[in-house]
Image 1 (cartoon, rainbow, N blue to C red):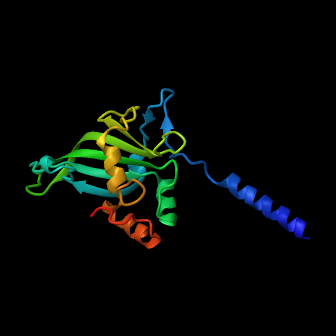
Image 2 (image 1 turned 90 degrees about the vertical axis):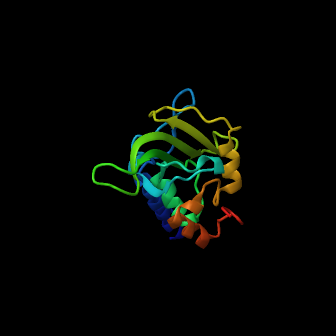
Image 3 (image 1 turned 180 degrees about the horizontal axis):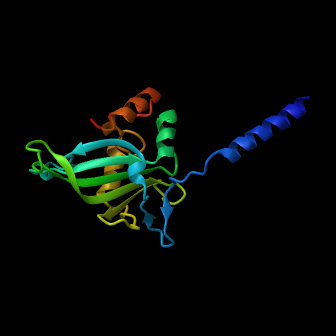
Length: 190
């Protein structure tokens, strides 16, 4: 009886795995190793938007600061919600857009305009020795080469990312999850 129950349980587990949809939001690479920009990233999970965020005191002060929009691959987002960390094959897209302060009927404030650049952060432990890699697409749709590991973005994310190399401190809904799960690095973002 036990054996029959075990066989039945294994069969149900196998059926469940077979019916699970294939993950179509994992990072994809060209034959030469360049990252292919996910065509549908704007349909992914929107994490947050920033206005005029800079990494250096010398960069601020623009009359029309840039907007940054961050999107997460849906499967990575769902995993983060469960665990408070990013799974392998996470893809995060940073879309940088110019802003305007006057146009049409708008007389104040800022709104997003022209696409200035797209940058992507990928967690792929089997491909990158540091697990994470950055790719700069500019205003192109790619594919894009990996940004060299000597670039400042690697050290900055490692030192200042609140959770697993990422700036979750700027994504309010995910920061709450990470705090609940206890995955926020001590003193991150202070």
